[in-house]
Image (cartoon, rainbow, N blue to C red):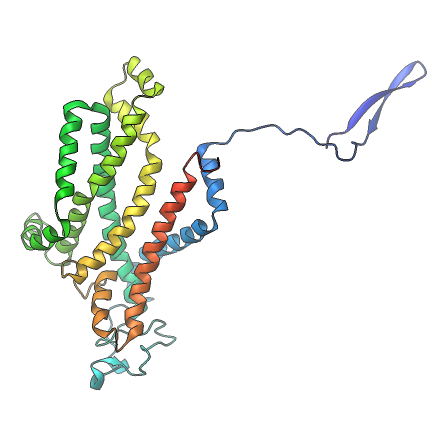
Length: 340
């Protein structure tokens, strides 16, 4: 509160007296504007569910990054067999009948091999998220480029790209992926990618990325069709701006919000797709762990060792659910009309 001052007469002169502010008096505050990012952060902080899933996603990413390092230094041990922890008379089930849970193996051991389940899930998360992230980047980049070009140029270019989008969407992706896997994996191997899991992983990334871009291309095309009629685009054209400048300086900065939201929604879909493809026999093969092939292997023991089946399934469910909820939360936070 600022003090109140007034002049008081003392004979021939004056003096200044300071008065305390009256009770209940309020001081005017300067009104300051907030940027769209500040508004989005404020909405995110109010959304408790999104903040929780953001923490879960951040923890999963950190674990996926650190898992290979922890495996090298011996903190995680995903490859060592422990035959002393399994019973050969029961088909390789853990000796204690409870999944082999212990202080040394908090999530138990793998039936048939005795390998540590926690270590394999952590390392499997690394490979699954690497595949999903790589496919997501291809999808977002290719879809953004095609959507920008179609939306801004219009005319025959828009018609041609739109027909390509319709054609790609018409293909039965899963059937084609299964039917053509052998041929395309051979092509990838001949191109220089090592045979085995590297070429299998590259095949999944390329198929998911190349067949997933049409959806985001349609979204970006619709956004660009609206943005290209705005005053700032007309001003840029009147000043002689090239299409390249309009793409990267005018349009793209106004598209980062839908791109971010779509990326967080498509990545969990690709994590699930990797798991499904591993179950169908197309994917990264053991002993390299992924969440998909761990879940596929655990199906054989679903009745006899339910914990071994549940832990990979729970890991996939938590990842997919967290990314989906994060995408929903980001979409709400980045909506300029959310608080109206």
